Image (cartoon, rainbow, N blue to C red):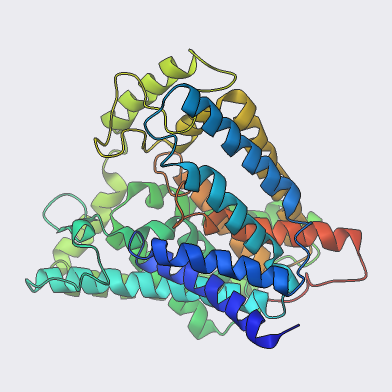
Length: 419
């Protein structure tokens, strides 16, 4: 293999994850051709794309079916969504699904995810601090349209899009804090601090539900419920170390929030308010009713990609865009396409569970992030854009690797711990 080409591919993947996590919606047009070039480089390197191809072709078939139905119905978003449902799943799916064959891929994934988490939270803290001081963030870092900060209500609120990645990265960091055996206590504490601080500053109640739920359930499964199924269950000292990291993270979060956003007493009340404020949202409830009515009109094939829900438009510029991800998928692609996506998800879960059982700490952390983003996507569209596709295709790459390793049992990478 050519080392410089390998470094190029790994560098593009690292940049894709970090940039789209920290500054989403700013540089996607530049990253897209780089991802395509990285896939071409994989072909030059003679990376075997066949293991990743079957499910990618299934996703392509769903996308093409949605496009055909959408064009037949003259959906306004049929052509604009070609990249989301056709091009990007193929390019990103083949690239990340084949990345495991390159030396250094695991270290690249870990570095990218860690860097993305810490950088996004640091930028979010800076946004709060600058806004409190009456300034503005540079537009190349934070889109002015997504730089709003509000500390006057019952919760901290911001539309800073860099916090979107916390849907994956916060549960991922928590799992790293619990199980990463070859990671220092200091770095694990940094990751846990970043996760807790980011969730508090994001002001997103869904994160307050998903991140603790995934963390607690993960600890119970790894330490108690699934212990007899695991070859390397976590030890008591690992849980104790995680609790210590979490305690430090709580203190650090309270201090930082008090400095960059609120007075000390306000910090306590507003942080508590993020937990106690009702999660009921009439806008999404109303949206759900419209979706259910529309899905009944074409349950098998759906309405095609880029369709608009009759009687409900959320965004005049993109009337086909909605928050309810799974309603939208069923509405667009019907039962047929949704079953393919469900089968893909279940296959990934099965393969990742095999890695978790084998004690693969990277797979465990990535699985936690994947579950977190799948839950958070119930109410927000984190996945249906180039900035969020890595959240499902990094797990997909690990699942493909597990499938290939199961066919070649003499090749065992599952014991490699996260650095």
